[in-house]
Image (tube, rainbow, N blue to C red; front, top):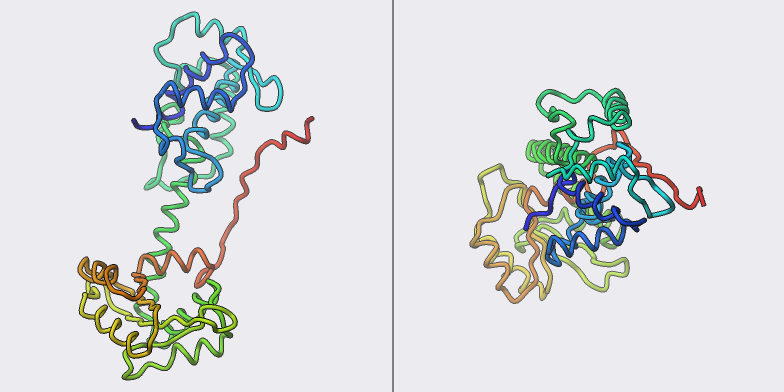
Length: 306
């Protein structure tokens, strides 16, 4: 099944505390069982990799219930229902969501304060009214971050395609060294710059001692000029002549499906990196861009209050 959004989890979270104080971690497990979530759904992580998506949504449901005064935090990781929360349950609501919570002053103050402090968002990325949002603040923030990185990737790829060939070689040197390949900038630059008739554009040490080497083929192609299976077989032949076992084929375009299949079934390990993967690696290893602004996500330090 699809993991319920945080508003759909508000009623189950409140009901879980109807009898006595509960532990939030236990509520997460109990609700996952009641919803019959699969192992994959339970393990699905936020992009940060630090919390599961389901746990995050349960925690946000708990946060909003607390802002509305329907539950109270009793001690670290524990909460219980309030008298106001009991009255809501006794009314047998079919659903508890932001619209229902908006009748409580504490929740209205929380929402108004959040909206006043929020930055102005361009109309092209405008959010629905707070009451109608199905995504948690974490999900909204990370989705916006993905959109920014996608735009950055497109801009990086356009710049690489317009740059001269020597820039592409320099870029690969910086990227591979940033990824932990061995050798110095000078050594890697000489190795990757020696294109000739031997069928490879360069070779770089895989480790600092030079115990193993990776041979490289680089094609700075325009969008739509995809690399076919013939180019992969030619590169394979070049690796064979060098008695090499590992190859890296980088292009600023894409690989055809036949090229990908060919690389998978050849006897030598050939890794294919297309334009999209190239820019993702540049972003991951801090090559070719600068950090414009940094946001910190802060949460309560529970140890401080114990």
